[in-house]
Picture 1 (cartoon, rainbow, N blue to C red):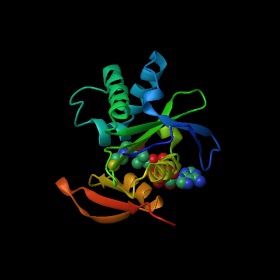
Picture 2: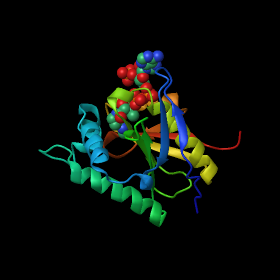
Picture 3: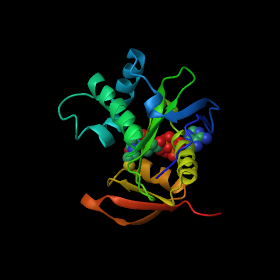
Length: 180
Ligand SMILES: CC(C)(COP(=O)(O)OP(=O)(O)OC[C@H]1O[C@@H](n2cnc3c(N)ncnc32)[C@H](O)[C@@H]1OP(=O)(O)O)[C@@H](O)C(=O)NCCC(=O)NCCS
Protein backbone atom coordinates (compact mmCIF):
# COMPACT_ATOMS: atom_id res chain seq x y z
CA UNK A 1 0.00 0.00 0.00
CA UNK A 2 1.56 3.29 -1.11
CA UNK A 3 1.30 6.21 1.31
CA UNK A 4 1.82 9.58 -0.33
CA UNK A 5 2.44 12.87 1.43
CA UNK A 6 -0.29 15.11 -0.04
CA UNK A 7 1.14 18.47 0.94
CA UNK A 8 2.04 20.76 -2.00
CA UNK A 9 5.63 20.59 -3.22
CA UNK A 10 7.11 23.88 -4.42
CA UNK A 11 8.86 23.58 -7.79
CA UNK A 12 11.26 26.26 -8.95
CA UNK A 13 11.77 26.67 -12.67
CA UNK A 14 15.53 26.26 -13.26
CA UNK A 15 16.07 29.35 -15.40
CA UNK A 16 12.98 31.58 -15.17
CA UNK A 17 12.84 31.37 -11.37
CA UNK A 18 9.02 31.05 -11.52
CA UNK A 19 7.51 28.94 -8.78
CA UNK A 20 4.83 26.28 -9.10
CA UNK A 21 2.98 24.06 -6.65
CA UNK A 22 2.83 20.34 -7.38
CA UNK A 23 -0.42 19.03 -5.86
CA UNK A 24 -2.46 15.82 -6.09
CA UNK A 25 -4.81 16.11 -9.07
CA UNK A 26 -7.90 15.37 -6.94
CA UNK A 27 -7.44 18.76 -5.26
CA UNK A 28 -8.08 20.60 -8.54
CA UNK A 29 -11.75 21.52 -9.11
CA UNK A 30 -13.15 21.67 -12.67
CA UNK A 31 -13.63 25.46 -12.63
CA UNK A 32 -14.19 27.04 -16.07
CA UNK A 33 -10.74 28.69 -16.07
CA UNK A 34 -9.09 25.37 -15.17
CA UNK A 35 -10.86 23.58 -18.04
CA UNK A 36 -9.99 26.42 -20.40
CA UNK A 37 -6.29 26.23 -19.47
CA UNK A 38 -6.22 22.44 -19.83
CA UNK A 39 -7.85 22.65 -23.26
CA UNK A 40 -5.29 25.26 -24.37
CA UNK A 41 -2.32 23.23 -23.09
CA UNK A 42 -3.49 19.88 -24.41
CA UNK A 43 -4.07 21.34 -27.89
CA UNK A 44 -0.49 22.63 -28.08
CA UNK A 45 0.98 20.74 -31.04
CA UNK A 46 3.60 18.80 -29.07
CA UNK A 47 1.26 17.66 -26.31
CA UNK A 48 -1.53 16.87 -28.75
CA UNK A 49 0.77 14.90 -31.04
CA UNK A 50 2.28 12.66 -28.37
CA UNK A 51 -0.60 12.30 -25.93
CA UNK A 52 -3.99 12.96 -27.51
CA UNK A 53 -3.90 12.57 -31.31
CA UNK A 54 -4.68 8.86 -31.13
CA UNK A 55 -7.69 9.44 -28.86
CA UNK A 56 -9.03 12.67 -30.39
CA UNK A 57 -9.14 11.50 -33.99
CA UNK A 58 -10.27 14.34 -36.25
CA UNK A 59 -11.15 16.70 -33.39
CA UNK A 60 -9.33 18.89 -30.87
CA UNK A 61 -9.00 18.10 -27.17
CA UNK A 62 -12.08 19.64 -25.58
CA UNK A 63 -13.54 20.62 -22.19
CA UNK A 64 -15.14 17.17 -21.77
CA UNK A 65 -11.69 15.58 -22.18
CA UNK A 66 -10.35 17.92 -19.50
CA UNK A 67 -13.25 17.12 -17.17
CA UNK A 68 -12.70 13.41 -17.80
CA UNK A 69 -9.02 13.73 -16.92
CA UNK A 70 -9.86 15.43 -13.60
CA UNK A 71 -12.38 12.68 -12.85
CA UNK A 72 -9.79 10.00 -13.76
CA UNK A 73 -7.34 11.70 -11.39
CA UNK A 74 -9.83 11.85 -8.53
CA UNK A 75 -10.86 8.21 -8.99
CA UNK A 76 -7.22 7.11 -8.94
CA UNK A 77 -6.60 8.75 -5.59
CA UNK A 78 -9.94 7.58 -4.14
CA UNK A 79 -9.37 3.96 -5.15
CA UNK A 80 -5.58 3.90 -4.70
CA UNK A 81 -5.11 2.71 -8.27
CA UNK A 82 -3.13 5.52 -9.93
CA UNK A 83 -1.71 8.79 -8.64
CA UNK A 84 -1.70 11.98 -10.69
CA UNK A 85 -0.25 15.35 -9.77
CA UNK A 86 -0.58 18.75 -11.42
CA UNK A 87 1.87 21.66 -11.29
CA UNK A 88 -0.03 24.91 -10.77
CA UNK A 89 1.37 28.29 -11.76
CA UNK A 90 1.31 31.40 -9.59
CA UNK A 91 -2.33 31.96 -10.57
CA UNK A 92 -3.34 28.45 -9.48
CA UNK A 93 -3.82 27.19 -13.05
CA UNK A 94 -2.30 24.03 -14.55
CA UNK A 95 1.12 24.32 -16.21
CA UNK A 96 2.35 20.71 -16.24
CA UNK A 97 1.36 17.30 -14.89
CA UNK A 98 2.77 13.90 -14.03
CA UNK A 99 1.45 10.60 -12.77
CA UNK A 100 2.12 7.09 -11.57
CA UNK A 101 0.00 4.79 -13.63
CA UNK A 102 -0.38 2.04 -11.02
CA UNK A 103 0.17 1.25 -7.35
CA UNK A 104 3.02 -1.16 -8.17
CA UNK A 105 6.35 -0.90 -6.35
CA UNK A 106 7.90 0.07 -9.69
CA UNK A 107 5.13 2.07 -11.41
CA UNK A 108 5.28 3.55 -14.89
CA UNK A 109 5.24 7.33 -15.00
CA UNK A 110 3.60 9.80 -17.37
CA UNK A 111 4.28 13.54 -17.74
CA UNK A 112 3.65 16.62 -19.83
CA UNK A 113 4.65 20.26 -19.66
CA UNK A 114 3.08 23.30 -21.33
CA UNK A 115 5.32 25.07 -23.86
CA UNK A 116 5.38 28.34 -21.89
CA UNK A 117 6.82 26.41 -18.95
CA UNK A 118 9.43 24.39 -20.89
CA UNK A 119 12.19 23.33 -18.52
CA UNK A 120 9.78 22.56 -15.65
CA UNK A 121 9.52 18.91 -16.73
CA UNK A 122 12.80 17.87 -15.14
CA UNK A 123 12.22 19.37 -11.66
CA UNK A 124 8.66 18.06 -11.74
CA UNK A 125 9.72 14.47 -12.49
CA UNK A 126 12.50 14.77 -9.89
CA UNK A 127 9.89 15.82 -7.32
CA UNK A 128 7.69 12.90 -8.38
CA UNK A 129 10.63 10.54 -7.80
CA UNK A 130 11.14 11.93 -4.29
CA UNK A 131 7.43 11.63 -3.45
CA UNK A 132 7.28 8.12 -4.90
CA UNK A 133 10.30 6.91 -2.99
CA UNK A 134 8.88 8.32 0.25
CA UNK A 135 5.59 6.54 -0.50
CA UNK A 136 7.38 3.18 -0.56
CA UNK A 137 8.25 2.51 -4.21
CA UNK A 138 11.58 1.02 -5.21
CA UNK A 139 11.85 2.11 -8.85
CA UNK A 140 10.19 4.03 -11.68
CA UNK A 141 9.58 2.90 -15.23
CA UNK A 142 8.79 4.86 -18.37
CA UNK A 143 7.88 4.14 -21.97
CA UNK A 144 8.55 6.51 -24.86
CA UNK A 145 7.18 6.26 -28.37
CA UNK A 146 9.70 6.27 -31.23
CA UNK A 147 10.76 9.79 -32.19
CA UNK A 148 9.87 11.55 -28.92
CA UNK A 149 13.39 12.89 -28.36
CA UNK A 150 12.31 15.51 -25.80
CA UNK A 151 10.79 12.87 -23.58
CA UNK A 152 13.92 10.73 -23.85
CA UNK A 153 16.10 13.75 -23.00
CA UNK A 154 13.99 14.46 -19.90
CA UNK A 155 14.35 10.86 -18.72
CA UNK A 156 18.15 10.99 -19.18
CA UNK A 157 18.28 14.26 -17.20
CA UNK A 158 16.32 12.54 -14.43
CA UNK A 159 18.70 9.58 -14.22
CA UNK A 160 16.66 6.96 -16.11
CA UNK A 161 18.50 4.39 -18.19
CA UNK A 162 17.15 2.77 -21.31
CA UNK A 163 16.53 -0.92 -20.74
CA UNK A 164 15.12 -2.09 -24.05
CA UNK A 165 12.32 -1.91 -26.55
CA UNK A 166 8.67 -2.63 -25.83
CA UNK A 167 5.34 -2.56 -27.66
CA UNK A 168 5.26 -0.88 -31.06
CA UNK A 169 8.94 0.05 -30.87
CA UNK A 170 8.59 2.14 -27.68
CA UNK A 171 11.76 2.49 -25.67
CA UNK A 172 11.60 1.31 -22.05
CA UNK A 173 13.34 3.19 -19.25
CA UNK A 174 14.13 2.43 -15.62
CA UNK A 175 15.30 4.36 -12.58
CA UNK A 176 15.90 2.72 -9.21
CA UNK A 177 14.78 4.81 -6.23
CA UNK A 178 16.65 2.89 -3.60
CA UNK A 179 18.82 3.60 -0.68
CA UNK A 180 21.39 6.22 -1.01
C1 LIG B 1 8.64 15.77 -22.75
C2 LIG B 1 8.32 17.09 -22.04
C3 LIG B 1 7.55 16.79 -20.75
C4 LIG B 1 9.64 17.78 -21.68
O1 LIG B 1 9.35 18.94 -20.90
P1 LIG B 1 10.46 20.05 -20.62
O2 LIG B 1 10.00 20.88 -19.51
O3 LIG B 1 10.82 20.71 -21.90
O4 LIG B 1 11.69 19.13 -20.19
P2 LIG B 1 13.05 19.51 -19.51
O5 LIG B 1 12.86 19.89 -18.11
O6 LIG B 1 13.91 18.32 -19.80
O7 LIG B 1 13.56 20.83 -20.30
C5 LIG B 1 14.32 20.68 -21.43
C6 LIG B 1 14.26 21.87 -22.33
O8 LIG B 1 14.76 23.02 -21.68
C7 LIG B 1 15.81 23.58 -22.46
N1 LIG B 1 16.75 24.29 -21.59
C8 LIG B 1 17.54 23.75 -20.62
N2 LIG B 1 18.22 24.75 -20.01
C9 LIG B 1 17.85 25.93 -20.60
C10 LIG B 1 18.18 27.31 -20.39
N3 LIG B 1 19.06 27.67 -19.44
N4 LIG B 1 17.59 28.25 -21.16
C11 LIG B 1 16.71 27.89 -22.12
N5 LIG B 1 16.35 26.59 -22.37
C12 LIG B 1 16.90 25.63 -21.61
C13 LIG B 1 16.42 22.39 -23.13
O9 LIG B 1 17.17 22.78 -24.28
C14 LIG B 1 15.17 21.64 -23.52
O10 LIG B 1 14.51 22.24 -24.62
P3 LIG B 1 14.44 21.47 -26.04
O11 LIG B 1 13.66 20.20 -25.79
O12 LIG B 1 13.74 22.43 -26.92
O13 LIG B 1 15.88 21.19 -26.39
C15 LIG B 1 7.51 18.05 -22.94
O14 LIG B 1 8.24 18.27 -24.14
C16 LIG B 1 6.12 17.53 -23.28
O15 LIG B 1 5.19 17.78 -22.55
N6 LIG B 1 5.99 16.78 -24.40
C17 LIG B 1 4.69 16.28 -24.83
C18 LIG B 1 4.14 15.20 -23.91
C19 LIG B 1 5.06 13.99 -23.85
O16 LIG B 1 5.73 13.65 -24.80
N7 LIG B 1 5.08 13.33 -22.67
C20 LIG B 1 5.90 12.18 -22.44
C21 LIG B 1 5.27 10.94 -22.99
S1 LIG B 1 6.38 9.54 -22.80
